[in-house]
Image (cartoon, rainbow, N blue to C red; front, side, top):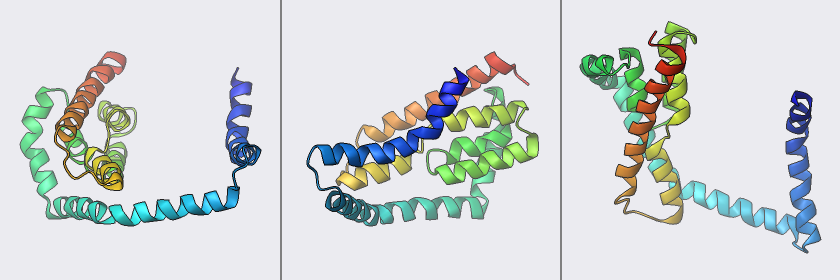
Amino acid sequence: MKTALDALSIWAIPLLLAGVPAVALARGVKVYPAFVDGAKQGFETAVRIIPSLVAILVALGMLRASGAMDSFAALLAPLSEAAGVPASVVPLVLVRPLSGGGALGVVADVLRAEGPDGYAGRLVSVMAGSTETTFYVLAVYFGAIGVSRYRHALPAALLADLAGFAAAVVAVRLVFGAG
């Protein structure tokens, strides 16, 4: 079984890269003009969402550089520790909805300081994998299609993030113990 999965993983991308143009040719699609048109539309979308991305990244940079993120994490530490979340993990909970890159930085910091096999290391790993960069996703996807009123999407997404963080705590405690 493992050998078959290894072979599939090695050949999946080359087969996909060769298969898509082959199917397009079989259907009579002019592959190169379609590719250039798609690349042009992708570039236009990227340019359209740049202001939203810059706003998120600047806000995140300001919070981290000013020390406000660390102060807020320290303020929340008594509550978070009562809920089974070490103080070192709180910055991930604050950053993850804003930025995937910022969240990876927090994960790297926790793994470097506390190790990947400790409770905090396992918890940040599961949290990073089970939550989403909500504001980034809303900015990119809603910005790409021109939606400016998020209405119920933002509260629903943040509630889903909260559920992901809580489920990560429960899952890590059940599988690995409280540490």
